[in-house]
Amino acid sequence: MHLRGFKPNALRMQRMLASVKAAGVADLQVLQAMAEVPREVFLAPTQAVHAYDDICLPIGEMQTISMPKVVARMTELLEVKSDAKLLEIGTGCGYQTAILCKLARRVFTVERLENLSKNAVLRLQALGINNFSAKVADGTLGWDIQAPFDGIIVTAAGDKVPDALVKQLKDNGKLVIPVGPNEQSQRLLRVTKMADNRLVTEDFGPVAFVPLIGEQGVEKVKASRRIG
Image (tube, rainbow, N blue to C red; front, top):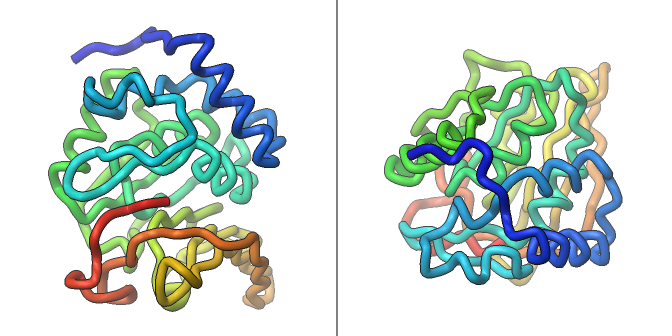
């Protein structure tokens, strides 16, 4: 598979970016990164016609690709700098990974489902995106050997912020994560780890994600699909 130089449908891309801007995302670097990533590449051919609609779409394994405005908002909250080293929990189809790779120096991404991880890696490499490392593991434990990270993004919700992820943040690093016991009560949080180890938590409103499965998350039997 070779997708380097693949160009997305210009009109559909413009419509998607307009929707993202209307949702309040203003970071020009985030918007440019999204403009450079063809969303249909991360979907089955039968879903390609809806690739630029602001909706969730299935990607297999009972998972979905998040709405563009959710991807954009969570990315914006990370405040990524060009020399950043990031950790992503929940590779999924690799779309969010691709956006992060456009912004950061290096991205480390963890996925618990082997098939999703394998296919995401193939898509990213086919697009010529190589500044990432991927593995199949329990994302709630992070990637300790590669820590610390400038930013961490989590695409599933636990009852609380995993301690392991907080410990793997650099001073002034940011963790963006949905937290809450169920889809009706989840909130999108940004946790900043200060130089004196204080944690500053900001709430950016309601979201709906599947349970964060793992040792510091929830039990596997409670999970269904990612809906964010």
